[in-house]
Each structure stands twice: as C-alpha cells, then as structure tokens.
Length: 463
Image (cartoon, rainbow, N blue to C red; front, side, top):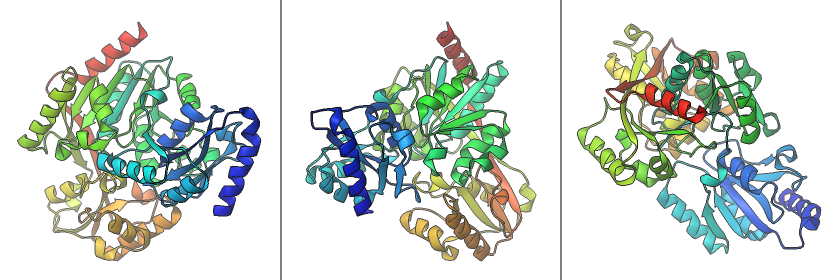
C-alpha cells in the first residue's frame, strides 16, 4: 500500500504539474466515507491550487484501503485518490509533505477534535475542521432539513413524519439521505431507491437498509450516493420538496428553507460537547426535544437552558418516540435477545435503545447478555465500545460481519429475538429463534403544530 500510494501520488503530480506554476497546497481530508467526499466535491475537486493526496477513514469498518475513483475525482486526479486507515495518517502527512489536514466527519467530542489538531500540528501541518456553509448546495425546490445533535436522537422517525405531512398536503417529497457509500464508489455516484428490490440491487448493508427501507415502505423515493450535486439534480426532477434526512449529527449538504434539529434529553449537554452539534443547534429554525416521555426534569432543564443561551428564537416542539411491538405476548415470560440499531449503540454512545425498553415493558423473563457469546467482529465491536449494555448492535457492513452477527445470535440460545432495527432482519440473515419486531413512531406533544410550521415554510419558499 505504501508503494502504491507513492506511485499514485507521483502520477498525480506529473499529470497536474502543468495546471499551475504555483506549488499546489497538499491536503488530506479526514473522514468516514461521506462528509469527506462532499467536502472534496464542493471545495477542492476542480481547484488547481490544491492537491488532495488522500482521504483517511475512521468510524466505519471495511471502508479503508479503497480509492476515490477517477470518474468522481475529476480531471486533476486521473489515478483517483487513495483512502487510507486513519492510523496511517501520520505516515501520509510526513511522506507526502502535507500542508493541511481537514477534519470532515461527525459525532465526536470536541475534545477529540482538539487532540487531532495537536497531533497534526506536531507533524508540521495545519489543521482545520470542515466549513458547513461552504458545502451547502442551492436547490431550485423548497428544502426541509432534518438534523440532530447526536446519533440516535430520533431523526429517522421524524423524517418519515415530515414526509407524511408533505404527502398529505399533495406534495411529492424527494428524500435525500446523508451519504452511506460503503460499497463500490463507482456504482454509488447517484442512487435511487423506490422499492425494497432496489435495496438488494444496490447491495445495501444493514445500516443502509435501516435508513432507506422504512421510507420506501411508506411510499417515499430516497436518493443517496456520493456526488450530492448530481443527487440533488436527480431528486429535483421528480419532487416538489427536498427533504434532507441527516446522518449522525452532521450538518446538511443542501441549504434548507427550514432546518429542524432534534435534541436528545437523555444525553442533555451533548448538543454543546459533540462536533458539529453546535451548528445544528445554533442555526435551527425548529428545535425538537424528543423522548420527552423518558426524560427527567433535570435533563429537560439543561436542554432548555442551552436553547435559551444559543438559539432563543427557534420554535421549540416537544415530542416522544412511541415504542410499538408487533406481538408483545410472545415476549412475556421468555428468554429474550435484544438486537438494537447499530450506529445508535456504537458511536452514538447509547448503552441500550428501544428494544431493551420494550423487553422490560413486555415482561421478558430474562434479557440475555450477548457479550459472552459474541464472536469475531461482533466481539471486537463490544471491545471497541465498552459502554454497550446487554444488547446486540445490528452490525452488517460486510458479509463477514453478518456471519459473525448470525453466529453470535445462535450462541446466545434465546427463546425470542426482539429486533429493534427498522428492517426485517430475518430477511437478511437466518435467525435462530422467532422474531418480534419493535418500531418507533414520532408523536408531537402539545403546540405548536409541526405540520403547520412545515407547510408554512414550504409556501414561503415557493412564493
């Protein structure tokens, strides 16, 4: 990999040397297979004064040691751009004479960002975080953006609620999902999902299906991929309103006419402590305090204090995530294995989710701890995220990880599997026990009415 990296780097320099007599500033973009590509596409791809020598990859397994392909990298990068593990960042910075490192991923403590800045400075390079404003694409259609301050706040149920409000008003929402390009990037420039079969045709991971499938089942067309200017153009051709369905706590890629940010009272204070949550908090037109039914008064007080200090003019809406179980009677008195949404439990920092709560409420005789039974990459995930409680995160970024997930389930020896992911997991892997599914539904509490706020914003944007 070191030899290949050097070879590609030299070919890039020979091809682009004639573009400018000025020495090109060399940059590495730190990412996780999404925001980093968007930063490159919108700020650096055609800049003849900049040479992006590599992307570094973190957070998501199985996405390093790839390349950003020439078809997407553009004319200045005929050999593409290497994607290297973040652990190789120091070597790349030193070997390639990197001038600047751009931090371009989300849902990490600000203290972690400070640590990266200190490391990069010690290697002799500048360090900057990405600029949310620089990456905002302009849409010809009204745009509503759903963002959050942490992974697992409840963006997805809210996005489906907003899409339903738009459909009920006779509007066609085009859902543009935050990037999840975990496969072959050449095939993921622009993706369109209208049916469940489309998920299979695009070889979606569990994590992708968790985001796309619920929208598709409700009649929404979902657009995603890696080149968001082209994705936006595709969505605009068949939609009346663009609905940005954000990922993690990242900022939107499209300039919104209405920005809705979800806050999680169960992690009150994280809206100030995690990057880039403060932008979503400060810029929001609407702040949704979710999980209101699970929160303590002191947690709500922290949120409201922070809202008053940073964004007192935002519309504040309180809401709950109603937990629905398709067959509660099958849980009562049984030994239950709980499978939760993967990202929420891993880098989202939650020790458990709705599945665990449902098992308790439905009278499970025992909630089986999967950690002693974990194998392979699932065991590695528990080691990497020691905060996880007695639940199993649904991880499936690759076939090998799916195999380890299935083996872990089989070793747990349960009577019922309570699946709290948004997809039918039994369609993806063979389950060793009967499946009971848990889902979430967004429910606003009191006033103001979010539906009215949404339609007023759309009407104002169309005027």
